[in-house]
Length: 463
RNA sequence: UCCUCGGUAGCUCAAUCGGCAGAGCGGGUGGCUGUUAACCACUAGGUUGUAGGUUCGAGUCCUACCCGAGGAGCCA
Image 1 (cartoon, rainbow, N blue to C red):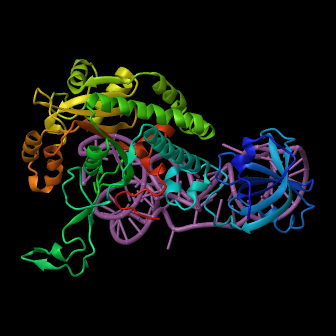
Image 2 (cartoon, chains in turn blue, orange):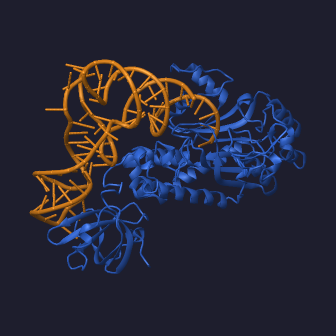
């Protein structure tokens, strides 16, 4: 079953050799002169390979003329320079074997545009479309770019747990994990008896690997996680998933400024990598999805990000003449309309907003000397909004303990997290980046459900 | 979860004031051509999301529910 991938054929200019290509038929055009053009795609690249077949093939009339969109084939032929326009090379077939038929009466994909809504209902077939296969290739390239970025800088890749022991991560609703028989739940003193559960205590799917990443940062220096994350929020938007992938670097001996520097470098590296390595796929997005994506990415790579404090942001917003639905006031969180106004109207580029009021941020963020704000940073990008959220972590034992109490949390649940501040504490910082939101930004895809192979959202875990 | 809009042929959509269910693409058949979103002709294809109601008559109006999209909240 040795084969040549179509991407490989297009990447070299050699003609004359014999090749075996396997893939799926996208379309067939017949000539009554006794030959047909078949476009084959194998997923290795966006372009189809044009295969010329003629009635010298034994199975031309019985099989080749019945090939339709979706059939899988093995083609043995000679690579030749194309006589037609539209492609440089093509394959003159000597043999075509039909590996699998696809009855056109019932095969849902057609040689035409489908809506993304419809394609979501056929997630088992949608990667056979141009756009979804391009998303898959870009997603793959971005994963690669993430690892090379951190590995080149000496960051350690840490696998933090998917199942977490206690409900103490403090970031949104969690999915509970249990092996108890839900039709027959053990009860003790009127409550569920978790002693009988698998872990002898309530357990959940992780909402963040950050707290565990801090452990390794405070031993190994620079670390990062890259894995799935789960939120049981009933969010129905184009930028939320119940299961998504998050990148979380964590650095010891690093403050907020170093954190911002890394985040900006990180984003620029990913964008540059994709522009360099996914030219054909990015061309598709720039042509059919959002005609400004390439220009936007190029501009971001060459420009500085706008960095401003929350307080400055509030000032700009309250001085603007824009009419907002929600009032702008110091102390309350920025609404989507505020973020978008700053990002898209005022600066027209990504912004890094820092030093938020401590009341609207998490307990683990380092409190500033003003005792009102914390060393937090959000990176906001046009259209998507928040793509990165991070902070310098509170490294003072007493301050952290006090913050935990202030937020109404139980210090016992955080005993090990507190001990990191008791034994050899050090300044450290990190951030979380939503991988799918980054893919959305890079590709211009407007719905997050179309940049992950199998989206999980409220009411839907199909496939 | 809230607000708004939508659900009609395999797909994308149209259907005026409540009055015969339509088009393009896709499929089938035939024709034509080194074609490439191929082209030309013919043809098949419908429980209008579900349940109920108003009416002589409902795709259209009313009620409930289901599903989808956009926005908001929550966040990455």
